[in-house]
Image (cartoon, rainbow, N blue to C red):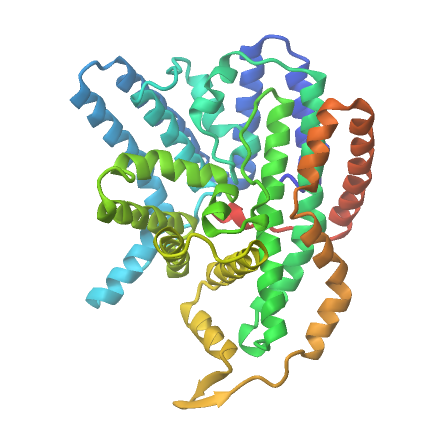
Amino acid sequence: MVFSSSIFLFYFLPLVCLAYFSLKKLPVRNLVLVLASLFFYFAGAGVHLWVMVYSILMNYGLALAIHREAGPRTRKFYLVVCILLNLLPLFYFKYYNFTLANLNSLFAWKIPARDILMPIGISFFTFQAMSYTIDIYRREAPVQKNPLNVALYISLFPQLIAGPIVRYETVALEIKNRTHSWEDAYYGLMRFMLGFSKKILLANQMALVANYYFDDLAGKTDPVGFLLAMVSYSFQIYYDFSGYSDMAIGLGRIFGFHFLENFNFPYISRSITEFWRRWHISLSSWFRDYVYIPLGGNRRGLSRQIFNLLVVWFLTGLWHGSYWNYILWGLYYFLLLMVEKFFLKSWGPKALSHVLTLAFIFFGWVIFRCEDLTVLANLVRSLLGHSYLDGQVAWTWKGLLASTDAYVLVNYGLTFCLAILFSMPLEKWALARAEGDQAFSLLVGLGLLVIFLLALVYMLTGGFNPFIYFRF
């Protein structure tokens, strides 16, 4: 079940809201959210619901053990056990076959791979669950003695399967004591409509262009075609993921939860460092606070700092998927950040630094998209103007603009323009002003309603509705 589906919009969400707001006591409301969330996950993951239940029970029990234990060594032992038990299902479902394939290749083994179907969103809720036990270990948040509260935190459906990764300390108090208001509900509804519209009207349209090119990169390597492939996928993944985050934040606000922002207009960045302060903020801050700083951060000398950053970016790439292109993508950003940190403080004047930063980011998405490294290597060679045919170098460019590129520009030119326009902070300004100005708020709400209804028509009449980050 996805947010941009008729089942969710017309059945699941209205029924959950009806049940939730017809009740008065918060513990009963929490029970409604837990049951709804488990059903939501079951609708998408089926029998893999047991992985979610396992995560809830295991983290609940070990967090209590960590909280009650006074001895530092025993507490640390419980924490290590908890982290390993969290990572075990993640490794099996996501990385077992990848690890086996590499061992087979390295040692000439012939161990057969297993037919493993990965539970949706396992990377998100696993990292979220670990945040709970680590915060308890650090004594930065209160332990939940009621297993229902732990279940609510780990399984809450708005951010369950594609983030943002909600840190336990962010919502620990709201699980037990939160308020609801018409203002929050109105803001949450506007935020949901905004994310839904971005997903349907921009991400899905950009996906059509990106898939057209990436499905046959070898046959579409003219310069303009590559540029269209790169830009369309860059906007697809941005509006797909940020749109989902908007919907999740909006739904959370409706039910009284204040999730932190996950995107802050990353494509206006003028450096790679700035980009990662604006892109997938919940993941980058998770790695900073739970990996980079515990490893020593920048407190143990330059060589150790570089090693720590290497570990973080290797893990960032690996978190996204069990293919070498994701690891290469993470290391690509490690190298760019090293250049920024130690050689170039900026990429030039403001306009130039913005253009170069976007070029690096957009090319990075090509690495991210090409799971077959051979295809990626051939693509890069083709873009340099040649390919290898029977060991010979042959020029491949037949022209700067193919007829199919012109067709794409004519039919999707407006969508490209809108994607560029709304990657700027227009919505942030509008939503911020709407919170303090009732007349403007009404105007923004009416405008969003019209756009939402248009997106709803697109959803009901079209069948192409993927979510990139569901597989992570």
